[in-house]
Image (cartoon, rainbow, N blue to C red; front, side):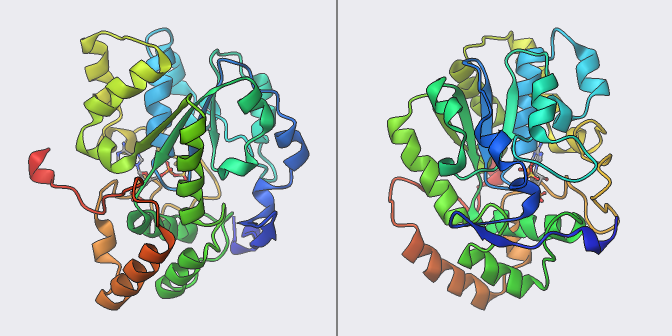
Length: 298
Ligand code: PPS
């Protein structure tokens, strides 16, 4: 796959998008959710694949181990709005899914979610990750994924992120939009990547109670082990190594999996500028992110 496959950003209902996520718009908007569907919503690079694997193991890991070893995570948890040439669209994969509940991935900002999810009162898990690690992860992803817009240099990419000119728009609008939704929609579990890193077991408990499952302690332990970064990185069904648009010679999909890698990318000036801009945009004191965690406590 060469760089001619890369898509251009354009403004779509006030959000920067590419055609790979808007071409199937009518089918996506008319998608018929079922009451037991679980929507996994994230801004890109927040750990979608991680939480997808957790939910998939919780629901299906004990009944079908073959599912885990022979079906890629992106087929087990279809990406609703994806519409990339030569591969099945998200809606087509979903129409063929026979499992129940269906686990569905989306990167949509809250206002783009098809209305049937709200009408059916579906459970939604929203995973958020701090802005600095999100932009670093996104930069490396756009370098290696030939379906993404050309990232350019790190400094200009960071500027674009602050302006919200990324695929799926502004990180700031995304995390805030979903946070506000949580105040009025009770079936939304809002969680943080940093918490998952800090204590996967604690976060797994919260997910279990949200989806109404009570697996044995032994099975919970085995889930925690299966979804550890290194295990997922070595797992072909989770690490995205089978996707042709991704060039692993440039960067891996499962790249570092850390909190605080931004420190290896931001200059002192970039960090100061970013922090000032962040304060202006993130005015809700109830929504707080951690850009570092005390790993000695883990
Ligand atoms: S995507 O393309 O938006 O769906 O990507 P997404 O899965 O949301 O995010 C990819 C980043 O999540 C990291 N990741 C993990 N971190 C810790 N533990 C586990 N198990 C794990 N699984 C995925 C992945 O490494 C990407 O982050 P970076 O910082 O680039 O390493």
